[in-house]
Image (cartoon, rainbow, N blue to C red; front, top):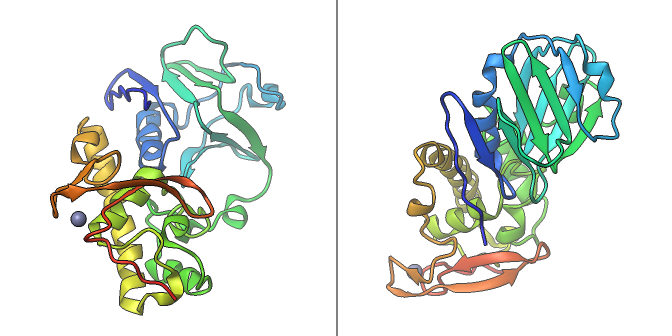
Length: 262
Ligand SMILES: [Zn+2]
């Protein structure tokens, strides 16, 4: 069961995330921009991190890398990872206790059931921005190079590998492979350079379609593979299996999605 994803991009935001993928983190980043440059007045929450450090500190920027949401301060960064059932509220509270709650003069930002971690290192050293499918620095050639280095790797695992496709998740995986007619068990070493490039480009492209559709509340309506029972190209049943080393729920059409194996 996937919970509903109520979102308002303007004004109040009420959001339940379920294993959010990169585009949902970009939506969050846009939704909290009013707090950028603002000082944290009060901090509460049951995180074990030393949250009092945040008091009186100014948020320099909100960033994201893949599924990581980053709140940047001058000397450190707070990394939020929503894991399975994390959620947030902007200018609203849930009944449950927040993991981290930041109060600003112009509102509040609350995070629930997520992982909160302080990062002391320089983000540019920690993160390969070229791997983030949503980032301006996204580099499909770098992704292709990484895919080539893993000839045995299957497409269904490659698309969940955060070092290669940071921000890609199970929905993106299923949709991209259906779009490019590639069987999820296809191995990277069996693909032609053109097909590897297509895999990288299609992932980037679908991530931005996801972003646009999610903002317009029509993401699910546009699913072609994820949770689907029939392939609309073939009018034949889709297969649902738990595939790959990642063993995640995979939907594919065995008729039009071609298996490339070594
Ligand atoms: Zn098909």
